[in-house]
Amino acid sequence: MESQLTTHNRRVETEVLTRQGLRLPPITLRCLRTAGIYCQPSISIEHQHLARKYVLRGVEAGGAVAEIGAYASYVDEQGNALPWLQRVDSIGVNGVHAIVVAPVLIRVQMLRIERTYDLLVTRHQLATSGNSQRPQLESSILFYGRRGSLEMEPWGKDAAFRGTVCPVFYTRAGERVVLPNDFQDAACRITSAVCCLGCRHCHLLGPRPIAADRAEGRSALDGTDELRADGDAIPGGVV
Image (cartoon, rainbow, N blue to C red; front, side, top):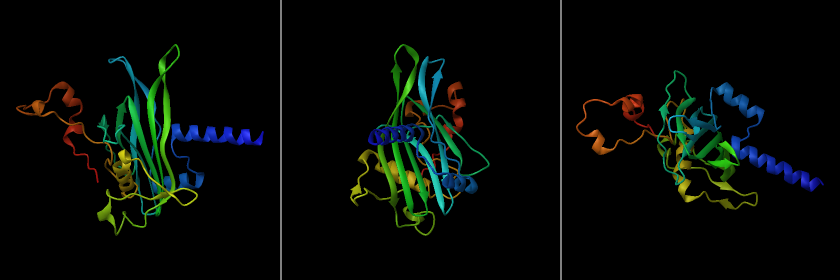
């Protein structure tokens, strides 16, 4: 009976981790609030009325101070950068940076405490739910690394290496855990994000590319482009 209860509890913990992201203890959450770091890993299902379809919505958010950093963002299934729907600018730092919508999202979330890192990579997609018209969120864990280490200070004296290094993770038995190749670049980028003091820009999402045949010979924006002019005109600022 005790074994069954333990298995059930682990299953519940895994489901919560998959859907809601890293579960942080109260002392860590208080530390993030005190530092003014806002990280939002939740994903929602939204309905596009004009297109008559459902999509997933995520928010790239987070940043760092010297002692701690937290960040969450998204890539596609091959680990490539997704275009943001909307870039978000605010007076404060270490908060919301951009919004993304897509039918499938790979969430990349990281927490840093000094030189110790937790990394969670999860896949999220829409799945039909019987006779219901509204789909359900189907999620799975692609990688979960706890207490990884990086013996550098990318937020300080080793800032030149930001964007090229990421933590090393081990099993309880001391064996190295290898991150899937498709997400190596995303891991390096989010490592840079949790070391970006007073972060004001996106590290993983980027502007939507403009096709060459549309960009040539135009002197004005059409109505659709006006709505996303800020997103297309501002560089992604990826470090």
